[in-house]
Structures are given as structure tokens and as C-alpha cells.
Length: 261
Image (cartoon, rainbow, N blue to C red; front, side, top):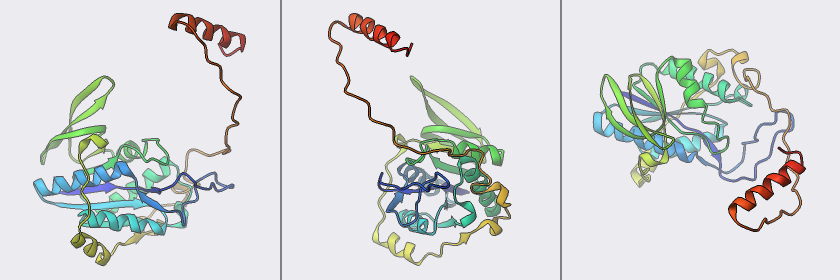
């Protein structure tokens, strides 16, 4: 069985500049880390391999520096990694990113499960995983907190819902996005670090994937950033005293007076 983990390298700081022309983050040269949710996806894939055999391949789209994060994934225990990097990919929204990942998965061949973190902490959209599954025409389950069983036929999981959880079974191949509740990611040991330093990580560009420029990057994005700005800080607030019922009445009155409701 082959397990593919889609991983993103994200800025380690909130001090990130915005490209004034594209409205996207300037990532080159910014200290970065593996997206925390994706560490849990990597760990879950490694546990799958330990229980059932197979191999784990980590896939990431980003600037050349994202190779560092891929080596960290290999140091954790992944069998291999592939970097999708090309100037043509710059400015991709979630749909263009999912298209690029789908092209790479198609090039990789057979697989059993694709694992993604619930969301990336620099965007918080939680869209790429489900979009990737739709493009690949495979079932997907989001917000998975536990994998109960995985066989050649399917995967059974618990996914969080409002007020509890539900048990879902999906045939393979399938895609799951995982929560932090699912496991505790392992730390890389010295042997893993040495292996990661010696591992060749291929870089695939738009030509390798056989994609058109109209499907990738800014040109292939369905959304556009019109403006990026810092909201103005308002004046001081007001504390409304009294019992909760009286506070609610007073607040509603002030909101009506202000034309908010």
C-alpha cells in the first residue's frame, strides 16, 4: 500500500510581507516550519505503514526552500518526498493548489490513502484536501480524530461533528484530513536525520506535471485578492453593568441606536 501525505511549509512568524501586485504572501527567505496539522498526517501515515507495510511519500508545493520541510518529514520516517516548485505555481489559491497536487498524484501512480492536515495555519481555509479528493474523484472524510480500521477494501474513521463524532467507512483509495487529536507526532532521531540528508528529493515543475499555465498559479486561480489592509483600531469600549438580562437589553438598545440592528 502507498500512503501519500500532502504537506505545506508555513511561515514560522506572523511578520510576513504581502506582494503588493498579487496580494499573496512573500514566502521566500522567511523562516518556515512544517504546518503543524500536517505533522499529525505524517505520523498517521507512518503508523499505517508500520501496521500494514507499504511506503509513505510526502508531497509539497512551494518555493525551493520547502525542501527543508520535506527533509524533516523524511527524518521522521517517510520513505521519500517530492517537491512541486515552479515560478508558474506562485499565487495559487486553494483550487489551483489542489489541481497541481492532483496532477502530481496522477503522475505518482497507484496509492491507497492520501492524508492531509485539517488546514494550514497561514490560510485556515481547510479547502485543499477536499478539493484534491474531488479532482481525483475519490471519497474523502474531513476532521478525522481516529482511524479505527484500514484494510485493502476500505478505511473506517471517527470524524468530529458539532456535539460529538460520527463513524464513517469509505472505500479505497480515499483521502482523509486529520485533527491534532489523532496521535502524537514522533521526533526525528539521528539515524533519520542522516538518512534525510542523503535522500534525493526530486523537484517537479509545471512541465513535469503536463499542466497548462491556465490551470496553475494566479492564472489558474478562481479567487483574487483585491486589497490587503490593516483594520483601523476603534475607540475605547464601554462596560455595561447590571444583571445579564438588563445588560442584553441595554446592548440591544445601543446597537439599534447605532443602526447596527
